[in-house]
Image (cartoon, rainbow, N blue to C red; front, side, top):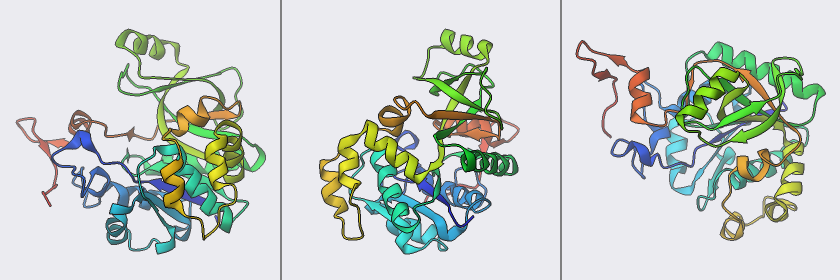
Length: 292
């Protein structure tokens, strides 16, 4: 476990959940499901099953540092990486990767959003362990694809090559596709070779940095000589805002997907929260969330 690091991306503002989620305390810092834990606390806890808590990192906007410290008291202060502005997931991941490589050039990274729900954490742990075993003998960028249970138009999809099983239900990715219309989503479900894009990744830190160098050379140049003295504000004032999917995953020829089914939701809408909540006799959603 010493060379396994986990990065929690916690920079979002959760605008679709206003007025519960507000800029001063967004979605990831709220107990949406009435479990007694916030989403970021649940994310942190499940990652400790595959990664020492000393190797868990959080990347967040500088406004949220105190929230992270109060909700995750076990995390080391130096493992909280503050972003001076929001530049999407590629700069966020490049920043975390540069920090991790300074400490551990042989590191494997798990990258996960802070605000997703996973109900079968035992299966989640097993799937991550298989991904790490795969990376012990393979290079490449690995993402988790959720087995689609309905023709959902709210998710992006991953088209994979079912004929080339690499073991552990891991396959080469053929294409990332944007959120489809209903008829297209129905066809994807029928074909069985399309998965929901979870936005979670597993890879060797050195490999993803090499892919950033190849596909996002300007971003790479900002982090090429990264050190503890690097001015992250200067980098963020100049770097492009781009997602890791658009910047790297859609371009790389070394992308694989593991098919998974561990009770996942990105909790993207109030409707998804309602569907996963307990209900009273009048079909009202029940949880213990209190305004704060």
